[in-house]
Length: 95
Length: 95
Image 1 (cartoon, each protein chain N blue to C red):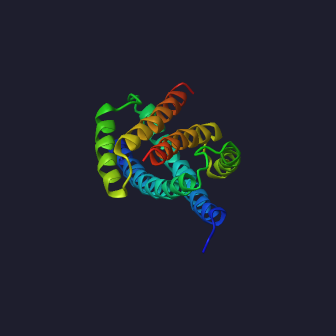
Image 2: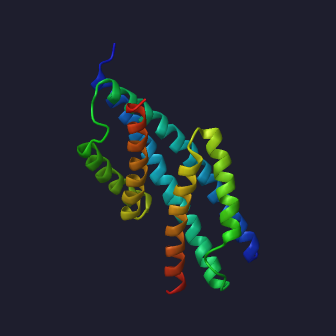
């Protein structure tokens, strides 16, 4: 039977691999939102879009149920990511 | 040539798919950290582990460079996730 240290190390290896997925997925997500930011700046459209944000929150909360993730946590995380996106969009606009 | 609306919709579809990956990956990550929380509670070991956290931060910052992700953002995000993990661990301990 595995001891405490072995079990802990095994779960931590999984966490590390999942974190790599998160980092690369976020890298790609910011690539996509940067393109959106450029499109919006060219079209002189506001960076924030509250209607889109509401749809995203609703969709993520539903996905979270299926993924056994706390929906409030998912919503907070999405808002944290979006606030970074908006900062980046503002930077693009002021270039 | 695609117009603004078509280009925007295309990038948003990518963002939505990437968000689904994020939600399912986080669901699995919390499953793993829940197991870690149970192991630690059984072994009566403290939920927080600053040494492990430093290693994780360092690793994520390196991965972020490769993923073209802002390293400070990645660190803030990791700390946000870890704070949720610690809250969950404390809940497990008090069961």
